[in-house]
Amino acid sequence: MGKAYVIISGKGGVGKTTSTINIGIALTELAKEVIIVDANLTTPNVGLHLGSPIVPITLNHVINNKAKVEEAIYEHDSGAKIMPASLSIGELKSINHEKLPEIIKKLKKISDITLLDSSAGLGQEAKSAIKAADEVIIVTNPEISAVTDALKTIKLAEEMKKDVIGVIITRHEGKKWEMDIPTVKDMLEVPILGIVPEDDSVKESQKMKNAVIKTHPKSRAARSYIKIAKKILGPEFLKEQKKKDDEKKSAKEKLGFFRRLLINLGFKK
Image 1 (cartoon, rainbow, N blue to C red):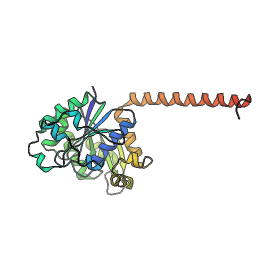
Image 2: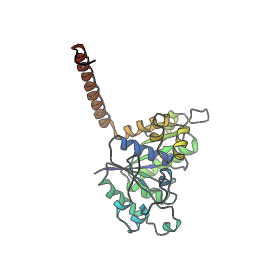
Image 3: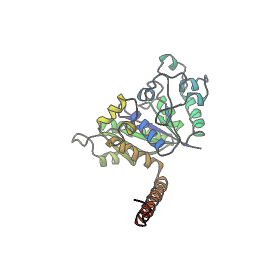
Image 4: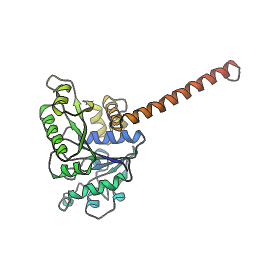
C-alpha cells in the first residue's frame, strides 16, 4: 500500500498548489506512481494549473457516490495522475468532507504516493485532508504572518496525531524584510524540506498550464522541487539512486574502454 501526504498551509497564496503539482510530477519522473488529489473542494485549482479546469467526473462525484474512484482519475501529459475537484458552486452544497479519508485509502491501494492539495486555513475542509493523510507537509513564505499560520497548522496536525515531516519555504528572495531561514526553523521546530526561490519561471509555467519542472527544467525553482521530491522519498531512495548512477557510470566507462581498444586494434575509426 502507498502513502498519502497532505500539502497544506495556514495562509493562502503561499504556493501550496504549485508545490503540490511540481512535487507530484517530480516524484513521477523518479519512477513513482503518483496521484495528485485536489482536496481543496471549495476553491479547487489543480485542474486550472494543469489546463483541465472542467472534466466530466470529479472528486465531488466520488464523494457523493455518483462515480467510482477510478473514474475520477486523469493522466496528465507529464505522466502524473490527477483527481480534480469540481468548479461548480452547486456541487458544494452536499459535500461530506468526512468521506475523504475513505477515498484516499482506496487511492493508496493503486498508487505509490497520493498527494492532497488541501485548502488553506484550519477549517473542516483542511482537517478532513489532514485526517485522510499519513503525513503532513507545510508550505509557507518567509514572512511573519505566513510562518505564524504555518505554526498553527503544525499544532493542529500534532493534535490530530499526524507527523509533520517538514516545511517548504517558497518565494524566497533573501530580502532584508524576510525572516531568515534559521529563525523560521526555530519557530516551527520541524525540518526544512527545501527552499524554493522566487522565480519568474513559475509564473510562466502557470500560463503554460504545466509544472515548472517540465516547462523550465533548469530553472532554480524546478531544481528546488526535484530536490524536495528526493528528500521526501528518503535516504534509502537516494542510496538506491546513487547505486544506479554508479552502475551507469561504470558501464559507460567500460564501453569507452572497449571502444578505445577497438580503435587501437584498427577495428574502429
